[in-house]
Amino acid sequence: MKIIMLGAPGAGKGTQAKQIADKYSIPHISTGDIFRANLKAGTDLGRKAKEYMDQGLLVPDELTCDLVMDRISQDDCKNGFVLDGFPRTIPQAEALDAALSKIGQKMDYAIDVDVPDENIINRMSGRRACLNCGATYHIVSIPTKVEGVCDRCGSPVVLRDDDQPETVKKRLEVYHAQTQPLIDYYKEQDILKSVDGTQPMENVFHAIVEILGA
Ligand code: ADP
Ligand code: ADP
Ligand code: ZN
View 1: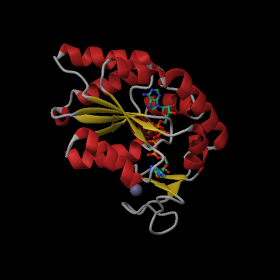
View 2: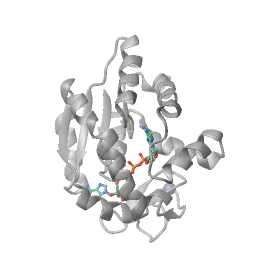
View 3: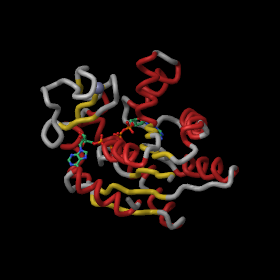
View 4: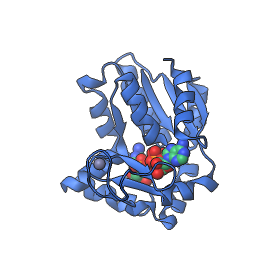
Protein backbone atom coordinates (compact mmCIF):
# COMPACT_ATOMS: atom_id res chain seq x y z
CA MET A 1 0.00 0.00 0.00
CA LYS A 2 1.51 3.31 -1.09
CA ILE A 3 0.03 6.30 0.69
CA ILE A 4 0.57 10.07 0.63
CA MET A 5 -0.46 12.24 3.58
CA LEU A 6 -1.60 15.68 2.47
CA GLY A 7 -2.57 18.59 4.68
CA ALA A 8 -1.45 21.94 6.07
CA PRO A 9 1.52 22.12 8.42
CA GLY A 10 0.23 20.94 11.78
CA ALA A 11 -2.83 19.15 10.37
CA GLY A 12 -1.70 15.91 11.98
CA LYS A 13 -0.03 14.19 9.02
CA GLY A 14 2.91 12.93 11.05
CA THR A 15 0.76 11.78 13.97
CA GLN A 16 -1.44 9.73 11.62
CA ALA A 17 1.39 8.54 9.38
CA LYS A 18 3.18 6.94 12.34
CA GLN A 19 0.05 5.00 13.29
CA ILE A 20 -0.58 3.92 9.70
CA ALA A 21 3.03 2.74 9.40
CA ASP A 22 2.64 0.64 12.57
CA LYS A 23 -0.71 -0.85 11.65
CA TYR A 24 0.17 -1.78 8.07
CA SER A 25 3.87 -2.54 8.73
CA ILE A 26 5.19 -0.14 6.12
CA PRO A 27 7.91 2.53 6.51
CA HIS A 28 6.98 6.08 7.49
CA ILE A 29 8.94 8.50 5.31
CA SER A 30 8.93 12.11 6.51
CA THR A 31 11.01 14.58 4.51
CA GLY A 32 10.94 17.01 7.46
CA ASP A 33 12.40 14.28 9.72
CA ILE A 34 15.06 13.49 7.11
CA PHE A 35 16.10 17.15 6.91
CA ARG A 36 16.18 17.48 10.71
CA ALA A 37 18.24 14.28 11.03
CA ASN A 38 20.70 15.68 8.48
CA LEU A 39 20.94 18.93 10.38
CA LYS A 40 21.66 17.06 13.59
CA ALA A 41 24.32 14.98 11.84
CA GLY A 42 25.86 18.20 10.50
CA THR A 43 25.60 17.32 6.79
CA ASP A 44 25.62 19.86 3.95
CA LEU A 45 22.06 18.93 3.08
CA GLY A 46 20.98 19.62 6.66
CA ARG A 47 22.61 23.05 6.68
CA LYS A 48 21.13 24.02 3.33
CA ALA A 49 17.65 22.76 4.26
CA LYS A 50 17.65 24.70 7.54
CA GLU A 51 18.08 28.03 5.73
CA TYR A 52 14.74 27.46 4.02
CA MET A 53 12.97 25.75 6.91
CA ASP A 54 13.69 28.59 9.34
CA GLN A 55 12.11 31.07 6.94
CA GLY A 56 9.01 28.93 6.53
CA LEU A 57 9.92 28.27 2.90
CA LEU A 58 10.09 24.98 1.04
CA VAL A 59 13.45 23.36 0.47
CA PRO A 60 14.06 23.43 -3.31
CA ASP A 61 12.77 20.46 -5.30
CA GLU A 62 16.26 19.56 -6.51
CA LEU A 63 17.39 18.95 -2.91
CA THR A 64 14.24 17.02 -2.05
CA CYS A 65 13.18 14.77 -4.93
CA ASP A 66 16.29 12.58 -5.34
CA LEU A 67 16.45 11.81 -1.67
CA VAL A 68 12.84 10.57 -1.64
CA MET A 69 13.32 8.53 -4.83
CA ASP A 70 16.39 6.90 -3.24
CA ARG A 71 14.48 6.12 -0.09
CA ILE A 72 11.47 4.52 -1.79
CA SER A 73 13.71 2.34 -3.94
CA GLN A 74 15.08 0.63 -0.82
CA ASP A 75 14.10 -2.93 0.00
CA ASP A 76 11.85 -2.16 2.95
CA CYS A 77 9.57 -0.12 0.67
CA LYS A 78 8.70 -3.10 -1.52
CA ASN A 79 5.30 -3.62 0.11
CA GLY A 80 4.49 0.07 0.29
CA PHE A 81 5.22 3.16 2.35
CA VAL A 82 3.54 6.21 3.79
CA LEU A 83 4.87 9.57 2.63
CA ASP A 84 4.50 12.39 5.15
CA GLY A 85 5.31 15.89 3.90
CA PHE A 86 6.15 14.82 0.35
CA PRO A 87 5.13 15.76 -2.29
CA ARG A 88 4.62 19.42 -1.43
CA THR A 89 4.71 20.86 -4.95
CA ILE A 90 3.32 19.80 -8.33
CA PRO A 91 6.83 19.16 -9.74
CA GLN A 92 7.53 16.87 -6.75
CA ALA A 93 4.30 14.96 -7.42
CA GLU A 94 5.22 14.62 -11.09
CA ALA A 95 8.71 13.39 -10.20
CA LEU A 96 7.20 10.78 -7.88
CA ASP A 97 4.71 9.59 -10.51
CA ALA A 98 7.45 9.40 -13.13
CA ALA A 99 9.76 7.37 -10.87
CA LEU A 100 6.98 4.93 -9.98
CA SER A 101 5.69 4.56 -13.52
CA LYS A 102 9.19 3.51 -14.65
CA ILE A 103 8.78 0.43 -12.49
CA GLY A 104 5.11 -0.08 -13.42
CA GLN A 105 3.72 1.25 -10.15
CA LYS A 106 1.55 4.07 -8.89
CA MET A 107 0.43 5.63 -5.61
CA ASP A 108 -2.72 4.08 -4.12
CA TYR A 109 -4.09 6.82 -1.85
CA ALA A 110 -3.60 10.51 -1.15
CA ILE A 111 -5.23 11.25 2.20
CA ASP A 112 -5.97 14.90 2.88
CA VAL A 113 -6.13 15.65 6.60
CA ASP A 114 -8.33 18.71 6.52
CA VAL A 115 -7.86 21.34 9.26
CA PRO A 116 -8.82 25.02 8.82
CA ASP A 117 -6.14 27.70 9.24
CA GLU A 118 -7.78 28.99 12.46
CA ASN A 119 -6.87 25.75 14.24
CA ILE A 120 -3.35 25.54 12.93
CA ILE A 121 -1.67 28.27 14.98
CA ASN A 122 -2.89 26.62 18.18
CA ARG A 123 -1.77 23.19 17.00
CA MET A 124 1.70 24.48 16.17
CA SER A 125 2.31 26.65 19.21
CA GLY A 126 1.41 23.65 21.39
CA ARG A 127 3.45 21.14 19.40
CA ARG A 128 6.45 19.71 21.19
CA ALA A 129 8.88 17.60 19.23
CA CYS A 130 11.55 15.17 20.30
CA LEU A 131 14.53 15.95 18.10
CA ASN A 132 16.12 12.68 19.15
CA CYS A 133 13.47 10.11 18.09
CA GLY A 134 11.00 12.23 16.08
CA ALA A 135 8.02 11.71 18.41
CA THR A 136 5.51 14.57 18.47
CA TYR A 137 3.24 15.74 21.27
CA HIS A 138 0.85 18.58 22.02
CA ILE A 139 0.87 20.35 25.39
CA VAL A 140 -2.93 20.16 25.65
CA SER A 141 -4.32 17.43 23.40
CA ILE A 142 -1.47 14.89 23.36
CA PRO A 143 0.78 15.65 26.36
CA THR A 144 3.92 13.77 27.42
CA LYS A 145 3.54 11.73 30.62
CA VAL A 146 6.26 13.80 32.30
CA GLU A 147 6.28 17.46 31.32
CA GLY A 148 9.00 18.27 28.82
CA VAL A 149 10.29 14.69 28.48
CA CYS A 150 9.74 12.33 25.53
CA ASP A 151 7.70 9.23 26.53
CA ARG A 152 9.57 7.11 24.05
CA CYS A 153 13.23 7.95 24.60
CA GLY A 154 13.49 10.28 27.61
CA SER A 155 15.04 13.19 25.66
CA PRO A 156 13.74 16.73 26.13
CA VAL A 157 10.83 17.79 23.90
CA VAL A 158 11.03 21.28 22.39
CA LEU A 159 9.16 23.88 20.35
CA ARG A 160 10.69 23.59 16.88
CA ASP A 161 12.43 26.75 15.58
CA ASP A 162 9.99 26.82 12.66
CA ASP A 163 6.90 26.48 14.90
CA GLN A 164 7.11 30.11 16.10
CA PRO A 165 3.82 31.89 15.17
CA GLU A 166 5.43 34.24 12.59
CA THR A 167 7.04 31.32 10.75
CA VAL A 168 3.84 29.30 10.94
CA LYS A 169 1.96 32.11 9.17
CA LYS A 170 4.50 32.06 6.36
CA ARG A 171 4.30 28.25 6.14
CA LEU A 172 0.52 28.45 5.82
CA GLU A 173 0.85 30.93 2.94
CA VAL A 174 3.35 28.64 1.26
CA TYR A 175 1.01 25.69 1.84
CA HIS A 176 -1.91 27.43 0.12
CA ALA A 177 0.20 28.62 -2.80
CA GLN A 178 2.34 25.56 -3.48
CA THR A 179 0.92 22.46 -1.81
CA GLN A 180 -2.86 22.84 -1.84
CA PRO A 181 -2.97 22.45 -5.66
CA LEU A 182 -2.01 18.80 -5.05
CA ILE A 183 -5.54 18.18 -3.81
CA ASP A 184 -6.86 18.70 -7.34
CA TYR A 185 -3.90 16.85 -8.82
CA TYR A 186 -4.82 13.68 -6.88
CA LYS A 187 -8.56 14.24 -7.32
CA GLU A 188 -7.94 14.01 -11.04
CA GLN A 189 -6.07 10.74 -10.51
CA ASP A 190 -9.06 9.53 -8.51
CA ILE A 191 -6.98 8.60 -5.44
CA LEU A 192 -7.87 11.54 -3.18
CA LYS A 193 -9.60 10.83 0.13
CA SER A 194 -10.39 13.52 2.72
CA VAL A 195 -10.73 13.17 6.46
CA ASP A 196 -11.83 15.76 9.01
CA GLY A 197 -8.61 16.46 10.89
CA THR A 198 -10.26 18.54 13.61
CA GLN A 199 -11.55 15.40 15.33
CA PRO A 200 -9.61 13.79 18.18
CA MET A 201 -6.55 11.83 17.01
CA GLU A 202 -8.20 8.40 17.47
CA ASN A 203 -11.24 9.39 15.40
CA VAL A 204 -9.08 10.67 12.57
CA PHE A 205 -7.19 7.38 12.59
CA HIS A 206 -10.43 5.43 12.57
CA ALA A 207 -11.62 7.38 9.52
CA ILE A 208 -8.35 6.60 7.74
CA VAL A 209 -8.57 2.88 8.53
CA GLU A 210 -12.10 2.88 7.08
CA ILE A 211 -10.61 4.19 3.84
CA LEU A 212 -7.60 1.86 3.72
CA GLY A 213 -9.37 -1.25 4.98
CA ALA A 214 -8.45 -3.19 8.12
P1 ADP B 1 5.10 19.88 9.26
O1 ADP B 1 5.19 18.66 10.15
O2 ADP B 1 4.74 21.08 10.02
O3 ADP B 1 4.23 19.68 8.08
P2 ADP B 1 7.62 19.07 8.19
O4 ADP B 1 8.39 18.49 9.31
O5 ADP B 1 6.95 18.15 7.25
O6 ADP B 1 6.59 20.13 8.77
O7 ADP B 1 8.54 20.04 7.34
C1 ADP B 1 9.31 21.05 7.95
C2 ADP B 1 9.96 21.89 6.87
O8 ADP B 1 10.84 21.08 6.08
C3 ADP B 1 9.00 22.51 5.86
O9 ADP B 1 8.44 23.73 6.32
C4 ADP B 1 9.94 22.73 4.68
O10 ADP B 1 10.80 23.83 4.88
C5 ADP B 1 10.81 21.48 4.73
N1 ADP B 1 10.22 20.39 3.91
C6 ADP B 1 9.71 19.22 4.37
N2 ADP B 1 9.27 18.46 3.34
C7 ADP B 1 9.49 19.18 2.21
C8 ADP B 1 9.23 18.96 0.84
N3 ADP B 1 8.63 17.83 0.39
N4 ADP B 1 9.59 19.93 -0.05
C9 ADP B 1 10.20 21.06 0.38
N5 ADP B 1 10.45 21.33 1.66
C10 ADP B 1 10.11 20.40 2.58
P1 ADP C 1 1.91 17.65 10.74
O1 ADP C 1 2.81 16.45 10.59
O2 ADP C 1 0.78 17.66 9.77
O3 ADP C 1 2.66 18.94 10.75
P2 ADP C 1 1.59 16.78 13.54
O4 ADP C 1 1.22 15.35 13.40
O5 ADP C 1 2.98 17.08 13.97
O6 ADP C 1 1.23 17.56 12.16
O7 ADP C 1 0.54 17.48 14.52
C1 ADP C 1 0.63 18.88 14.82
C2 ADP C 1 0.33 19.09 16.31
O8 ADP C 1 -1.05 18.80 16.57
C3 ADP C 1 1.13 18.20 17.25
O9 ADP C 1 1.37 18.92 18.43
C4 ADP C 1 0.20 17.02 17.50
O10 ADP C 1 0.48 16.41 18.75
C5 ADP C 1 -1.17 17.70 17.48
N1 ADP C 1 -2.25 16.86 16.94
C6 ADP C 1 -2.16 15.93 15.93
N2 ADP C 1 -3.37 15.39 15.67
C7 ADP C 1 -4.25 16.00 16.50
C8 ADP C 1 -5.68 15.89 16.69
N3 ADP C 1 -6.43 15.06 15.96
N4 ADP C 1 -6.24 16.70 17.63
C9 ADP C 1 -5.50 17.57 18.35
N5 ADP C 1 -4.17 17.72 18.21
C10 ADP C 1 -3.55 16.95 17.30
ZN1 ZN D 1 12.04 10.84 21.81
